[in-house]
Every structure is written in structure tokens, then in C-alpha cells.
Length: 567
Image (cartoon, rainbow, N blue to C red; front, side, top):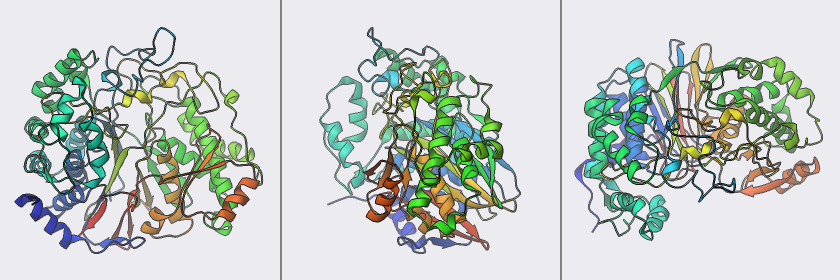
């Protein structure tokens, strides 16, 4: 008999009563607030904050902490990310809480004597872990824009961790893998995720996380310092010292999130606000929209061969710019951001597009380049409050379940974001290995990201809140959802559910989702010289549209437990 605790049962009843009906391409409609995230319990938590009078930032914070409990594959306090805010009054800002390299990091830290990556150390083990930023980012956003009591925003996550909630089928693969491990490095992970540290929780069984609840209680009571100082910091730094990791108490104490201006562009009558470096998302998104703006895309037909050709050519050029120029602005002060997002730069790029023939991505165009592999396991949440203030928040552990490492006594997974740095300086090939100095590891440097939390505004007010996981596909997924709404006039659920493509300059291949684009379209597209490969689903977007004072939410059906909840 599966046991359901009273708190979970109550939350599920509230959830069932609050959803106005989401079915495929029909969005959820609400008048007073909307939360869309990758787990129904987290969306419920955020919605209750809005119902109690909290604003969009409060609800986003509570939702993010709840996801750290209910979505351990990507929700986190051991990772990092970005938040874009657009107020109903026109005020726009963003928060950068991307992870940092430890003070002891070097550009060649992952290489063996032969100059090759040793033991996949940039993605596995303690060296792969960057200094986490999530708690600092949520704390800073609350200090600047929050209205509710900080401790109240942590309580739902603490309750979910302490009292438990039903384990989901989406976790079964990870749990089965974990049960087969024996390395001492993952002993605390087994204790946190397996019954009695050995057995797999079946779907629906109540999973409790007492160590995580204690870590969250320290954050509740001490804010920023409840993570970066005191007991949590001690446990994490001592674990790293025992396992030859680099993160120290000094690394944690010196970490700070940053408030910074977002990237701003325009597309017709709309303003586009997205994340600035160390995210590459905003720059690439605005570049692509600038390239595509003069074309009559709607006349070509949605996902027609010619439309996909032009979109691909825009993707190709924006990703080449990304490879050459972008990194952490604190270490690369001369990045030509204004030039890259200018209409004039897009005009020059557009001149090189042949309307009937694919370009070729040549690694010799750029010198000494390397693209690190970027995982698709991230999560996104979107929130709009009763006043129309909007939040777009994307954060991640990098790989699914990050490094899979839990420090003893902490209960939370650590990221493996150091893999987003260039591990082999100067290595280049046609498979997509690219390496520029802007994204080499260095002490306290933030690694380049593709996360693209975005808010589209009309007449100075939020109109569309967009974001998705998906590694480097994030940028292109956000692009296509925006075009679906602004050019093809889809509702937000139609825009989210439509099939997607991805091209990232190198390798010179376009991926199509395996369903949704016809064989005839593929054939006509390939006649133009493109190479196509099929893939599974691309992204799990969670978006909100605001129209006529009504909020329309869409949780991507590609997301196993995702929900849009409004009231």
C-alpha cells in the first residue's frame, strides 16, 4: 500500500482543483496569476504564493526551491542559472547566477600528460563541479524585487523534502543506475535517493529527503549565508577536500550573483529582452531575429522547406558569432555585444545567405576554436502575477542529475558545469569541437551558457514569457516559439507544441524532431544542400502569453510532469 502524507495529499487536491484545463494545444487561461514549470507540485507552490499576495519574483523563488526537491534531474540549489524580469511598469532587469570556476582552476585542469581529457574529468567527478550560484541568485532577486517574507518562500520546499512526495516514473532510470554503483564518491547520493541507501523507490512511493530539508532550513533562516557560510559550506568544502575536489570555504564565501542589464532587441513592434553574457542566448537570439525580420516568413508557410532554410541560415551565422566572441564579460571586457546585436550586423550576415542553397560551415573560418558539449538537461519556469509583472527563469545542473555527487549531510546534487568550459585549448574539428580564449577555465570565471530566459514586450508591457531546457538547442527553440507567435499568430500552446529544428554551425547538420515535419518538406530542404538527422524531442518549453488582461499558460507536453497552473 503506497503511503501519501497529508501535506502531499492536500497539495494534489489543490492542484486538481486549480487547473482550468490544459490539453495539447489548448492553453490554460487565468485572470490573476500563472505559473508554468516542469513539475506540477512546484507550479502549485508558486501559484499559492501568488494567491497569498506575493509577486512574480516571490513565486519564481518558491517554485525554484520546490523544483530543487521535486525535480532533482535539473531543479537545484547546487547549480546555477539566469532570471529575466519585466515589470508591468516597464522596468526590466536580469540576474546572473551562473556557477563560477574555483580559485584553483586552470585552463588545462582536465588534461593528462598526453594533452587529452583525463577520465572525462570535465563531466564526471569532483573537478567537474563549479561553485553553485542558485541560492545567491534567488536571494539577490528577492532582495531587489521580492515582497513576501523570505522564510515563507522556503517553507513549501522544506515541507516537500521533509514529509516527502510521490516518486515519479521519470526518475526510474537514474535510480536504477544509482543502485548499481558502489563507488564511495556516490555513497551520500545513494543514501539520499535510494530506500535505505540500496533499493529503488517505485513510482508513487513517498520519497523523503531529510538532509535536503535541513540544508533548505539553513537557507530559510540565514538567507545567502545559510548556503555559502556555516554548516552547508563546511560540509561541502570538507567533502571536496576528501575527494580531491577544488571548491573551498573561500570559494563559497566569495561567490556573489550579479544584477545586470539584459540584451535588448526588437522584432517588428515587439521588444525582445533576453539574457546577456555569460549566457550566449540573448545575443544569438537577437542576431537571428534581426536576420529574419525583413523576410515575409508568414507567406512561406510554417515549417515549409524555404522557411526552414532561412531559419537554418540565421542559426548558422549566430552560432558562428557565438563561438568566436562570447564568454564571461568579467574576463572578456571587449566583447563586441552592441555590434553583434545591431541591425547593421544582421544586414551584412543576411547578404551572405543564398535563398536557394545552403551555406557550408567551415571550421577554418575561425581559428583555434572548441565547443564544449553542453547538456540538454536544464529546467525553465515562467511566472506572471496579478499586476502583470513577469519572470523568466532558467537554471541547471548541466547533465541530468548533474555530477550525480551529493556531499555527505547536504542532501542536494552538485552540478558538473565545469564541462561547459573549453577543456582542450586550441582543438578544432568538423564534429563541433571549437575553442576560443573567451571560454577557457580561469579562477572565478563563469562558463559560457546557452540558457535563454526571454520576455517579449509590447507597448512597454510583458506579452510573452519564454524559456526551455535543451543545451545549445535552447536558443533555437526559443527563437522558433517566438516566431510561431509573432509571425504565425499561434496561441502559446500551439507555439510550444509545434515541431522544432536545430543547427549550431558545427557540426554542419540540422536536427529535425522525429515527428511533425513531413518527408516532402525534408526532401525539398535537403535539395538545398542541407544534411538532416532525426532526433527525439527538443526542449521542454514552459511559456505564458498575456493578451487582453488574460494569462495563457502552456507546459510543454515533452515535459513528463510539467504543468501550467493559474487562478
